[in-house]
Amino acid sequence: MAKIVLIADDCSSKAVYLESCQLPNFYMADFSIQALAVRQYEEACELLHRAGYTLLDKAISADIIIDHAGQLMAIRSLFRQDGIQAELSDIADTLYQA
Image 1: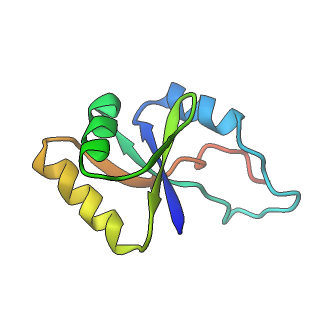
Image 2: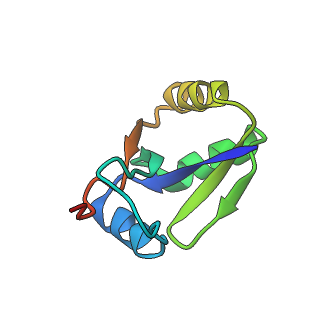
Image 3: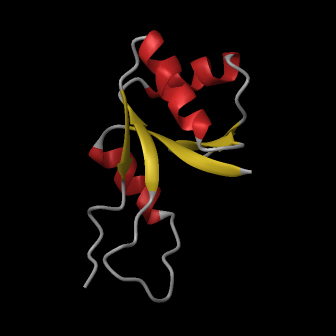
């Protein structure tokens, strides 16, 4: 079982989420946190609940529990059908990595 982060697609939500993350002791420029960033966060959560997905609510985000990678495409398709724009992206791209 795996998870993917669902987060609002705005800088402040991403910053708050990253503040609560624990970085590895040693990491290089390849460190990333993949997430589904959506503009309509509350609507996306409701849609996933109705579709039977398990969401672990966090303060500013939610973890979507998935069983296999194919579910990511199914979730994006579900969002697209409901008019919710979602982008799979690295939300740790603003961390200083030197």
